[in-house]
Length: 489
Image: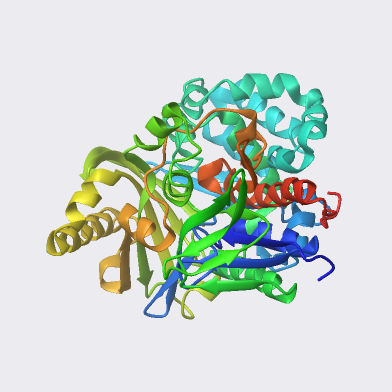
């Protein structure tokens, strides 16, 4: 290496892997300590009976060559790669046979909406017009563009203001068509209170071929970045949990592992869960009372906290890649009353299932505390998971006749599953700041040569986490007085 300076990264999530890559590009000797046996953190998948159940990626930003996000993925070894572009964002199906398909071809979408709801032609025109205005503006590039990115949004400021202040539910309420009023709020992962501008940005970037699904899914995507770390001369040490971040006065100087061994370094990046980083690894030394209270009072609600995955002897290639099934009446599943199912079918990626077969996944909101209590009794915990799976299969059966006899693999992942394998538990109430908008790394004024990154630190999805790792290394390079090795994006 051109420099004798070094960096240790705690955790091989996407933010940590990104930090490792950029540290190596900047000439720093770099090691990553990961408690699990695989890279990726929340960007992961798991195998059951020949099927791969993907746990993360819905739409990956930065798939179009020439975009700043693509350039970052290229530096990280994640691009170029085969990317799949389904022709619809999702399809909403009503209990009486109504169908609303959110095509990624905007002309096709406009025609479909006019046919579906001619009484809403004016509102449909406004929706399509807003999408068109955003065609050359990807809001997820802000973490890489910074203030320059904000200036670039000035031409669309009125659109951002109008659609950024409205939720999906509020936009849906503007339609006269009864089915569209109910269906529209659900089309973005079922998140009815999501700001509508987030949906517009995602749909228009899908239309532009900039957001897609990397062939092979989340695990393969994370593995490519881990391979980039190794190819640059870095080391990823799996099965080694970090117990403490070592400090000397106002500097981070190393880590202590679970086995008691100490490893010294010139700087540390933590990609561990926020609460783990601040309360455990740093022993609460750098948090004030307000932050401590926030971290010790996390949210109990877990959005998409349950993943029900089914490996089925059924060809799904002709199915929409995502469905929202509106129920004719509310039902109770686990600890939530729901009126719809958010379903993903993976027939568009044949690598995730044996030939002629497919994967169906249903995502459910839940509470952490329910599953934490059940975990203390393994039999009750297993019974509760089995009950969820049986309930979901019964709800899916009318849409997929014969499904129950075609199931070859079932997996129910709960918040406890996620916590066990990734270290990510209940999320503290986030701090609203520009740091989150731009996915800036989190720094501690009283502790130099340290940063923490990742989704719990405010990274916006995979691009935000990767950009956060990049920015963290840039900041640490300034402190270490070494040149940053990343390209100008």
